Image (cartoon, rainbow over all chains, first blue to last red; front, side):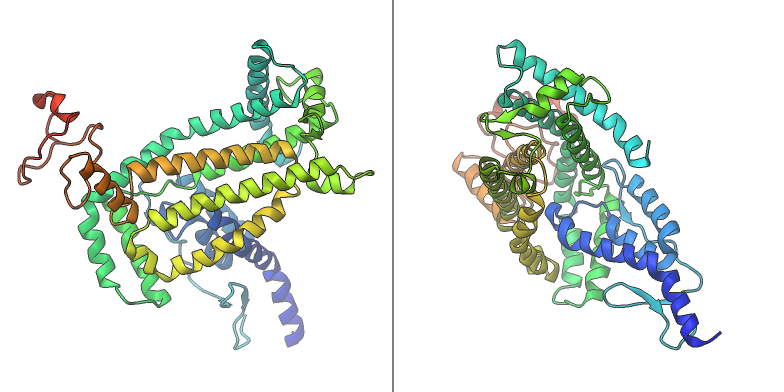
Length: 107
Length: 324
């Protein structure tokens, strides 16, 4: 496959999660501060959602986030609760949070 | 029915029930069933029911905050370990360790995301109930088409319909200036109350350590940008929904005020002010701030010195409490 086709295929594949990343970043920047710190976990629910979607994509990431939201109630003990790690991290995350292809070209 | 509609259905049903109940209450004490004030007071009733239902969550949070006093030395140790380290990596490690400590000691002072998650659907439920009532369409539950027509037609001060928003009023021919003015006033009140609540927390109820952190400085910049965001989104909501928001904000402000006064964060300015206040009343204080005199408190550990009793406490029987 030519590099251009691979590149656009990867771009399309990553598009749903990147749109979600943009929305989550906006939420974390504009709406989250309205309420201050409320989450009983580290990383917070929205941060967890961001990481989950970056690492697992929109569908799996959203499912993981919903499960986490269900765990975040006043009777939970809270604590550290990370996204279950993936074995192969195929993509790179930019400073803003977008998921992109590794710079060496191997997707 | 779509997914969101299905999720909102029970919420809308409950909202309608509460609204109709309060409308009935106000009407039966002689208020005009079609008046805007009656329906606005029904919305106030809705806020009271929702926020009162959330009080147990709030109490739980305060109890955990009390436990924070016990773990203060451990917390200090973590803070000292990362003192002066401003990079993201250390900050993250510090948050992790703090959360771990909260979990281990069962003293998590945060309220969790559940109350927020509960409030949002209520907000959108009310939005949708108002929208449908505007067309005199009967609700999903107790809101009959007759009541819906009243709700949709109810107007504030007889001039500003509850279902209209700033944007709808601006686009109407002719423009509804009164609605626009009321919407602006409400946005200002809303922004103001939000601002006061935040400022109250920031200036009074934060320890010096938190104030020095970079996250806090970032939050403070946002605090000044927020009113703009807030005002912008406020313009698109109907007056009825804005009223819900506004009253809810006032509730938060009052709740916050009571908490900051009586249960301040250890080491904050409010805690110092409270110690001074209590000292003036003639109650001896420990450095970490003893709980209020008229509230029950756990038996002091034997190593602590016997505290002189205040007026209220001396009335209590000493043998009643069991040591924990």
